[in-house]
Length: 280
Image (spheres, rainbow, N blue to C red):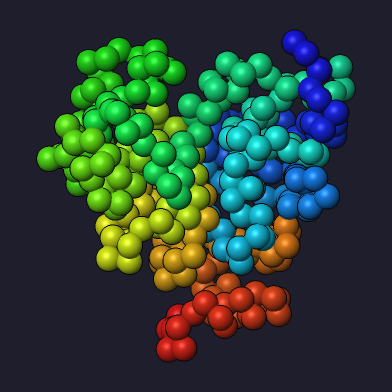
């Protein structure tokens, strides 16, 4: 295995895995990420417990989406570590250093980390059903019959039982995003990451996607959701994290963050994005 590039993290590996098996534990330790001279993440440390729903809020450019992308190694970190259930993501410790995994090893890790993007990212030449079955069959090498049956169940779960043979161009934006959610769930991931899943939708389509995520949150899956939907974050999240300028400014329960935020920056942000008659 080749040594990770000089930009790869060189700090000690993160905490060892817990003695009891877990599913969906995320441990982020002192993560830094820069793009050129712009430091986007400035030492992020965060733990997400198994089954917890965490909403990440903050202004544009605060590093929210970049943080999400580092969790499944779509972005390499410059310093620090990320682990899911005690397994480092993107790297393996050896002789006191971290060595970057080969591409096929990273891809295998990503099958345990579902991600739903802003822009759906569906394959335009595949039907809804084929979009959902593609990764389990080709990346996880699971049997086609079982994968297809599971995909049909998932499309029914997100309210698209009558759209399994439709192509993305034949679906509304909300329907496409629901296919993307079913696609992420088809991998049976340990965690699911949502990167502003409603930002590309027309306002009248937002609720149909949020309702699916609400249902998923109630199922016990570990979720990390970057969102600008404040009421949704208040109602669904177990914990809210507020980021600004590449750092976590404040975190707490929805009642605490929305009702009695401790930090002035949090109060200033919420005063601009909440309705004047917002009721906690």
